[in-house]
Image (tube, rainbow, N blue to C red; front, top):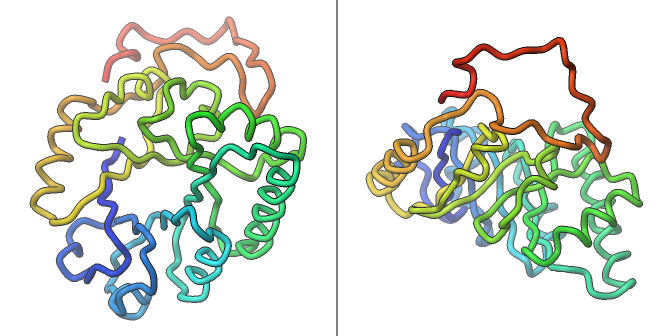
Length: 224
């Protein structure tokens, strides 16, 4: 997996130019250097929104034309029927707003919200919405078929994700480029990239996976 710096949107991008891509933690209006014309090729992989007003924040991100791959939306467990309808309404609004822009929605679920939100999306046929892993999620397997990005901390045990074959971007909160490089190097040493999962998933897109008995991996395929 690739470790990517996660920095506040108010930071000046200049010190981070050699670390493309980056992820932004939305903390209000972005620094002027993040505009497409000013950032000189520095790619923004994702913007992580706060839990206060994600729809308004997402629309503001789009207004600034930040050209991101993902909007990461924190989601608490919807305790009531009204809260569940509200969540679906928010997601519908954001899916309409991002249509045609090449931007995907990834939900960063509270640990106690995983099964509830999964069931809600399944009932609403919300296959277009994915997930963002974080250390509070103990069992990532139920999210594996749409696990599009992640966020971790120094020292996070990423072996459960490696076992699932996860090899995409992993955000690491950063304050300074030198500190990020050291922390990312330590994580890369502890968790080298994988090619295939140690155990193939039982489901994909909510449906059972049927093994292909004619497919046999060589003896080296399970090595990093």
